Image (cartoon, rainbow, N blue to C red; front, side, top):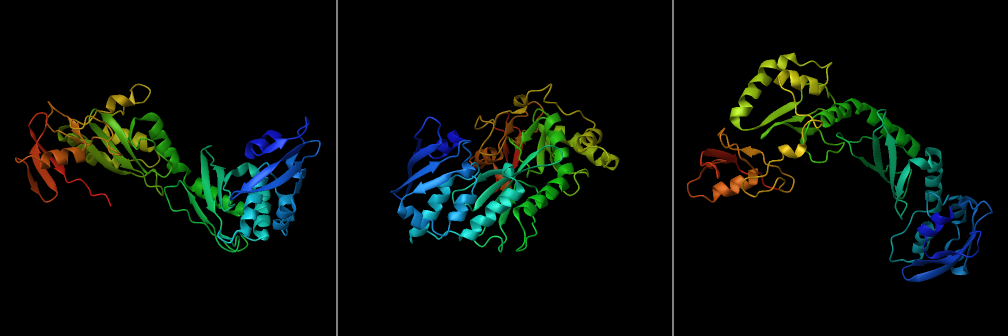
Amino acid sequence: MEKSLVNDNPLLLPLNKQQTIYDGFITVQERDFRMRIVLPPDRQLKEAKLHCCWQLKHLLRGYEHIVKQVNVLHVALCVLLQEVVLKSHPECRSIPPPQYYSQLISEMETLGWDKLLFIDTEFRMLRLKAEDSAGRQHILTVKLKSKHPAEAPECSADLPVPLAINWTAQSTLEQLHSQFLLVLESLTEFWDVLDEIDSKTCILEPEKPCRSDTTRRIAIGNNVSIKVEVDPSHPKMLPECCLLGAEHVVTPLRNKLNANMHLWNPDSSVLHNLRDVLEIEFPSPATHEKSSFNLECGICYSYRLEAAIPDQVCNDPRCGQPFHQTCLYEWLRALHSSRQSFNIVFGECPYCSKPITVKMAAQKS
């Protein structure tokens, strides 16, 4: 406990071997305030006593019950004092009234301090942790308004759907956290589907999937992959599928997908259905290195170009060289022999000189 006090407040130093008395300063906008913290024999910060200069006492007037109420294990005492001192500087924006802090601490006591991952120095932004029924960890970011709880907070989380929270003037953080848990449970099946795909196939995109991602680009073989988009509301239904690769490889797979679509069984997993419908076995991370599918672009000689990976492939079976869409577009546009029709550029493969086409690269907004 005493180590936490010193680590969080490096200008405080212990004055005795028992480490129950600390003396030092807090500095706010180049102004130092002398203070001393005396801990009880069991060195519990909750029962600590604060001694300070008269200037700081004057600034703390009206906030004494807040200082006593704060458990410094979870909210650094000196941070709270700095926030109170800022009130004396008119150039700084005002801080909430004492009741705001009382309400916040009371709600955190009810919710449980173990669910608090972070709180900023203004006591406005909190990160609360939550766990769904499958053991996945999630974070709820809450930005409180100065009139909390009369005003609804801003809430955000890494979710594939908008986070809708019901809030009234009587709502609390505990109720907010409970609503978040219900949202997580409604998405459990969706994440189960994607977790199975992530663990049993080689994912090309996104490089580092997050919980809000609904798409996966799954490797099927060299220069051929399928991009699936799972619906969070109906995760076991047939997802939107897009086959990527050379036409001579993609066409047979597309024909199988169209012919076997009626075989899709919502009671089976998405991955199992994809195997049956496409009549293939996906390369497994247990038997294949993901890097073996990371073929570099034949123009820039890199795999990733910002967020993009090579997704344009020469259709000649003897070539099959992949390119970034942007690289191939810029290359063909610079050739006098190339021609453009609407948003498609026609030209020759930089490697084998066989006909190749590419759509105009999407403009970034």
